Image (tube, rainbow, N blue to C red; front, side, top):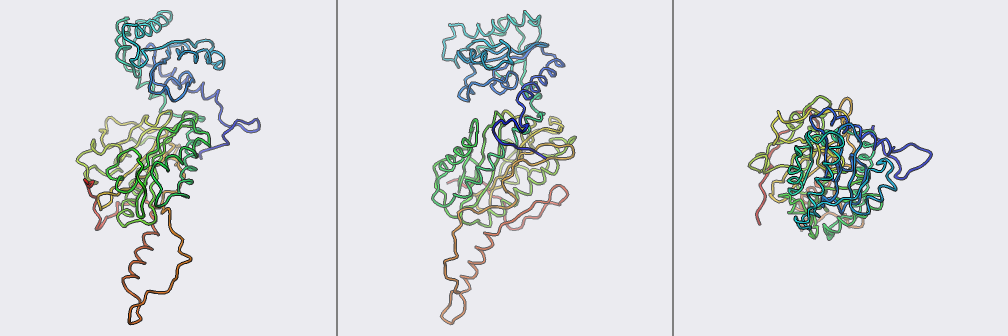
Length: 467
């Protein structure tokens, strides 16, 4: 069973052990590096830098690629950081033991190539590799700007792909990583609770984004990476970006909340109806829940990602020509220091290119289904931790049934039946009332792997309406 604690350090309870977290991460990548053909790893990806060196200078630097680290075989990592950040690490990051140095790349191309920054980066790396006797061994690099890669090659270093080794290391989570991932999900549970209490007709998508961000930052989020808030006809096709659209009665609205707590991410969708739910949306939600429950039931150590992907519907079943066109709508993906890690679960990936599921993997599973009207859709996502015998869902805001937000209170309205001239109840009014009640009582529980797939009668998926 997963664990979450209070979010501050205390002397009376053992919570996240950050010294152990740092040590476990470094020892894991050291072990994989030693058993590989690589002599060293050079990382520019800030998530990989954090995994190896446990340093951070703020999310503003995530797309700048101005800092890097070197991990030679059988040696400790060396960090080159941005200006005064290197001095800060010397003072407050004792685990680096003085291996924090100032360095700067080409400033995302802002510094003229003639200034020689790329060559300086290559020189710094080569000097350390020569001292370690590793200059003639392959150098694994995760992501790199072309001028720096060319400079490394010009310096005589053999540059190869190091990203796969880093992602392999990050695929299996330590005990402290699991607690941080569970805690990050707990904070999103709270954000969805706040949303559900206030959503209704007249609220804008961007207002929802602001409320989510405030809730998360108040709880201690390090970085709200993104909030997809998608409502009404914007739900199909999925645009993957929020707008200032005003929600209306009867709208579907789904959210994906992506944030980091001490670096560890969430990717966590929920769908709601505003005021009431149409029959088409009810059906779409049922299908999402069914396919998701089927996928979750297949997760266990020793199963393959291809076996889990078989739970997802094919692209042609919900209005797309092929799996590439529908990519990410039916998906599984690892979650850790990034929202996209190994393993990836998709019908796009041939079975022979999949992964075997192992204990202490953490990944998200997400499904999508368009309604029959062509412009509404439902979306659900759960994060799971692989256990010894199956998996545990750590995204706990309720999603077994479609929740209707912003319903009007009707206790003050007259309950007298609508009378016709002959004194009989108006049949049309009764029928409207029955339909409305059915919409508000939406409940669906998927049956998992052992259930036969239901036969969906009368409501077929429709392609996106072009307006």
